[in-house]
Length: 386
Image 1 (tube, rainbow, N blue to C red):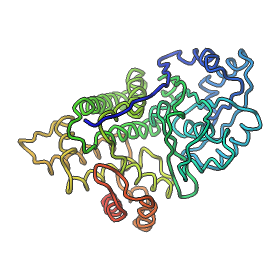
Image 2 (image 1 turned 135 degrees about the horizontal axis):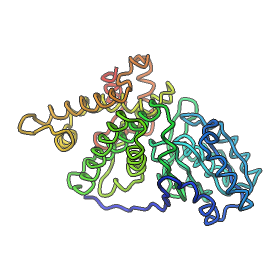
Image 3 (image 1 turned 45 degrees about the vertical axis):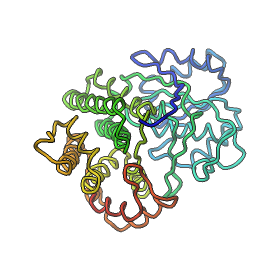
Image 4 (image 1 turned 45 degrees about the horizontal axis):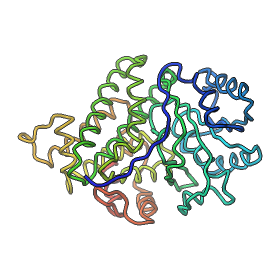
């Protein structure tokens, strides 16, 4: 078990009616001018917009909004809203929705106090002097961005992340009923996203990490069980609550304690979604199925361990390599049960851009920690993914 620092100050208000705490949370954070970011009209249908307007009106908070967020959020909208936020003297950004809205809000919170271009943080790794506070009302169970210190932003064919503890939201309101109206595809790509965050953390080369090993294994088991319940009954609010909480648990960095997560698969998927505008969760379904097959041949031990402990593959019946391959099969079967694609050809993608994406992913060096991946290894994994 390696040494670690853990810090996460996000306040979680979870459960039905949790949105009623918004006015108090805004007051506690001394908000004077709020920028609301979301996507489309769903927040009005769900009644969230009225809750927000009532809170800001009650507290006399300045209010501006944008409902223009799209999946795989881009720098162009962020730049526009940074300019708007500067003009309106915004001191707090509230995101409603999932990862795209939250990451947009985080980027805006970086950009408003900054004199340069907000892309500098993502491209040049500039450390911000000041960051505005962010709050979240989560309406999906997927990215875990509501309690994470990371934001992902796209600029053309580039998709990059930025990490800083100061962009961890001050609060996250999580009412599982808000997820009940999601289309099944959106629910299921969210589940795949949650699983991908758990898998990235599990695939560590640290051999002495029993506590987080068992925590992650338990979280994966809970996700699989509740995904099945939700497939059987999409209206099962208890299953939705479990999955929404798992989304946060999987990505609030608590499960990183004592280990070094991999993240190689995410770097590959970021290239795919930047190049082809894939939905992230479905992209992760494709990549992890292939990544596991590739790793079975060169470093199977962690995959074999998970196959035994979660999927019941007995080491007396199967060697490490066989169990690792069985894990890939189990993952693929689960993703297919969710109705997701698991091969690039199903998404109309050929090998035409593999070299371009692999070179772009490794521009700053090898990616991933379980087995560091150079450009050729990424191409090999993408070929398996076909």
